[in-house]
Image: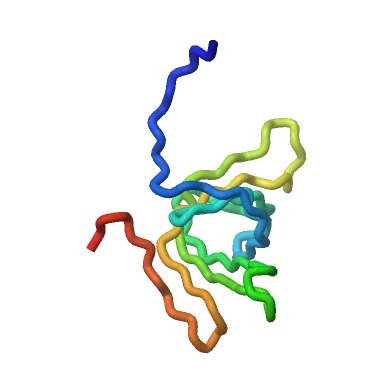
Length: 120
């Protein structure tokens, strides 16, 4: 029997395991999971909690004619550092709370805000 305490679920949307390439000025990596309000990815680079970021995700198979690039804006809400003894430059786990996104071709990019459920 598991006697560990149950913590309440804090996620507002279900997560989906998906590996999507991620790029930003602070580093690059691959997602581990995503939801409507955030994502978690493994990356090399320098990230700090609270840091504002702009990410580019490439969905290679979302459109049969060409990859779909999605630009996201958000902030770093958690950084999981490598355990001690692991060499510098090892991938970091980075959790991003998404605030806005845009997708489509560069001429028609429109930033869409992500609002909590029930927000006006």
